[in-house]
Length: 141
Image 1 (cartoon, rainbow, N blue to C red):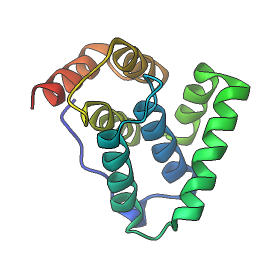
Image 2: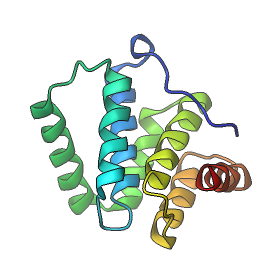
Image 3: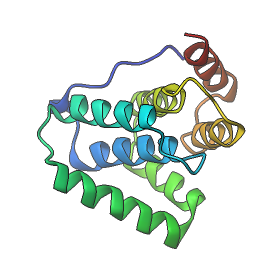
């Protein structure tokens, strides 16, 4: 599974976009910390995906919704919902790649982050070996 570039904004509908943002946030927060590097990479990625059209207040609301849903439903339920909102295999691969890029942004891949990415790969029905290779390549670069 090669590293994927984010899809252009015009090909993303709202559920796809929200799912990508949610997954990137879950990846950034997998170790319980939202480091400065992860935060910067997260916001840059979201700006790129949305062509800078989402105001900060909307981003803050979306993140708060994700946090609330995560606390209420748990990680497994949130990951399952991502699969529903990312119906195509290509969208799932892109989402995984974006999440992995956020995880490695601070140069450290903690076991909790690696575990999340493997859970994401399983939830999105991606090949575990390919997913692990994406993480390895990104962490090495």
